[in-house]
Image 1 (tube, rainbow, N blue to C red):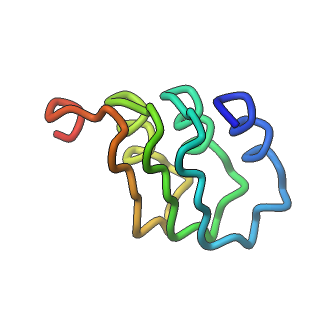
Image 2: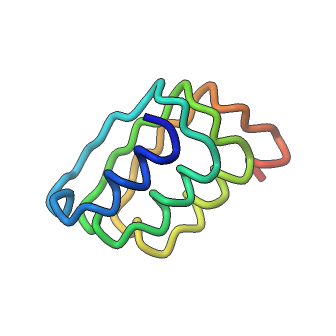
Length: 88
């Protein structure tokens, strides 16, 4: 899928009622994480599985600082090249 796929999918209004999404192992980097974090089409998203991607410190920060993912309660980011610096 990669970053372009994430941008395309998360720009769709068809995701408005989704509560959980698994996009693990999709070669998503920080740009893709930013697209997710900025999407206004995910008002009910509670769980996102991003394990085994490459979002890194910057992508993690985009997600945890998102002003649109208000209902997110479970963010799975294992094995994403997030360092201790990014986790602080």
